[in-house]
Image (cartoon, rainbow, N blue to C red; front, side, top):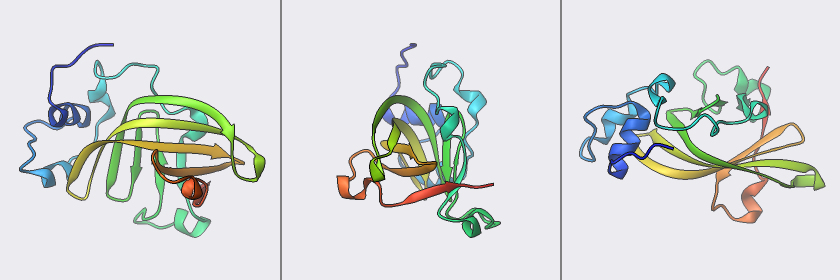
Length: 155
């Protein structure tokens, strides 16, 4: 893996493909799309979201059809986006565990560069796939919340 000599904000800006970003202008970040082609050389080819996690996910079919995309989570090989929030995968770890209703679950603990609503940062997200449903949350969420908000795959 190639080392990059950047500050945290510089690293995030590099991952998000944003030039000239500084902490004094966070709104600049939220308006710039993340271009996955600019990630070459920044992350390795191993750290991608597995195929089973990719696609469009929402609480229900009605939300899937919302033209504004509110409530829809889209997962691609190296990116995850929600309404007004975009994340680029930096590193992930895959594990297997028991999910809700004692079903087998595949979990991704992902370190992501995240931008949205004028904020920019590096955070840890947890994505679990169990019983055909996606459970999305912060890595440090309490156990009681882990399986609270299942998303279905949009058709």
